[in-house]
Length: 265
Image (cartoon, rainbow, N blue to C red; front, side, top):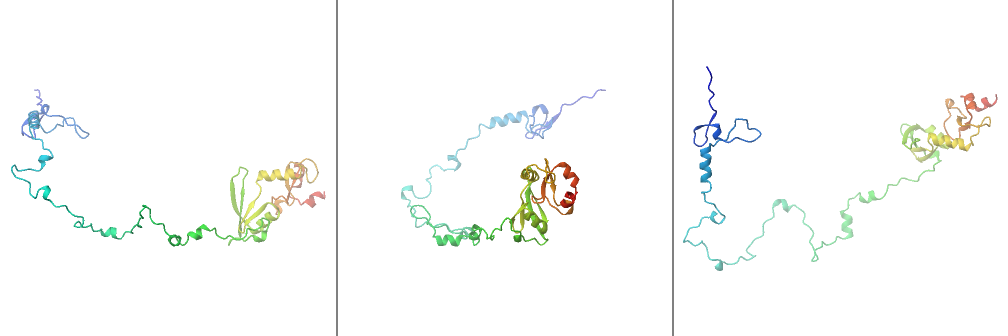
């Protein structure tokens, strides 16, 4: 026994008759499905299309109905009196606009009257003149005056410098070390809280070797290394006063000895 597939049908929205789907137009859109159709069948569509051009076109002139044989109410245009400007009252300002500041009156040339210098001075804020004048920082200290250094509450002084590649760095050191670096010509005083290291590692090595003409301080031969007169292990620092040029042999032999102890051998 075979099943007979009946054609799919739909009820028309106008004639209320059940008709096959081929009589209806397909729906278009994202939400429409494969079997979705419009509401009007083919015959109803033809009837609606035939009745559409028969409808009268309404123009703007016919939008207001006029009765034939009747004149418009009111006096003719020639007999109407012109409305004087005195009878027209100006609109009242809204309460929101009443609180706005009124603009200055303009002169005949169309420019607003310029304010006096005294009025301009009053309109400026109080701190404007104070911001224009730079603050009084006092007298700049001498670069070699260590007495001008004043440590912070933690007893530290800020030291600034630059690396071999030009990158800036800074660190905090104690007051005693800052005084030593300034006295031994390795730094200068910028202000009462800051000192600046004069040489990077590469510049400092070049300074010492050229100053001593590549001559060993201990034996007088050719030297290309730097040695500390007061060893760093005993409190010496890398400063132009404490460093000298030395050969590799003397530098290795001296190690952490004092100069007098090494030269007495």
